[in-house]
Image (cartoon, rainbow, N blue to C red; front, side, top):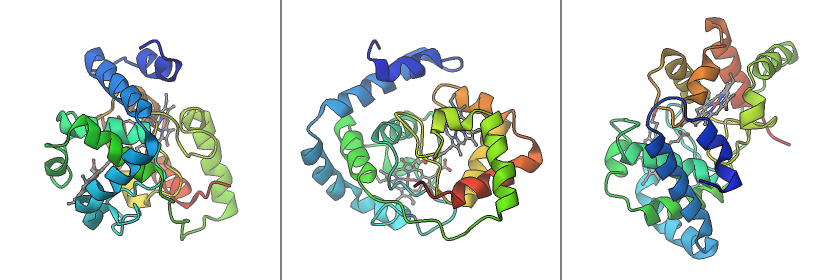
Length: 210
Ligand code: HEC
Ligand code: HEC
């Protein structure tokens, strides 16, 4: 846990089990130490069973299912880890991770991180953009997810993600029902007023990083 990449993860462990956070961090660290190219090609083969839902190129055809293209590899490993350990549960998703090894998690994460997310189809009116931006700055969304929302380390990319999926997750974090590896996202969502959830989901899904 001394590696600088995990400083934030370690400090953020307010809720839940520190042991789980430590394990996820150690796992993600191991992932990054593997040879990238070999893992990526293995990941492409292992991802065939995921394509029906997440798209062959990581762009999900369904608005309720997240696209995975361009997510930070470390976030994908931690998300898969959370599902595999039963800390995040979804009837569609869970059966596909139960039997995956740590090596599978690593390979899949490298594959999806290497893909390009399709550009957003919708554009938000300028006055709404300004309002939504202010909300994301006031609530520090930009500090963790980065100013262009491409994510970093164990923090997901939210730019260009499906709006319906984002809205469901934000409501879940605010209600405390969406699983959260270190509790920081649940805290962040408390600052969003009910009428800001949709505004922010719209803004993020229409955001196209430069
Ligand atoms: C039957 C459909 C289905 C299949 C097949 C499937 N998933 Fe998923 N996946 C989902 C759904 C639905 C969610 C969102 C769950 C939620 O709302 O918490 C999800 C979420 C995820 C997430 C979290 C993404 C995020 O932004 O939080 C990852 C990572 C993921 N899936 C990877 C995979 C991988 C890798 C495979 C193949 C081994 C796979 N999925 C197979 C439906 C599926
Ligand atoms: C302290 C850091 C931090 C801040 C501040 C923060 N987030 Fe997050 N966010 C995270 C982490 C970490 C996750 C992943 C949680 C998990 O899956 O266990 C996350 C997950 C999400 C997700 C789910 C995405 C997915 O693919 O499943 C959305 C949407 C999101 N954040 C939006 C926001 C918005 C909007 C704000 C501002 C109101 C915000 N975040 C502020 C760290 C942060």
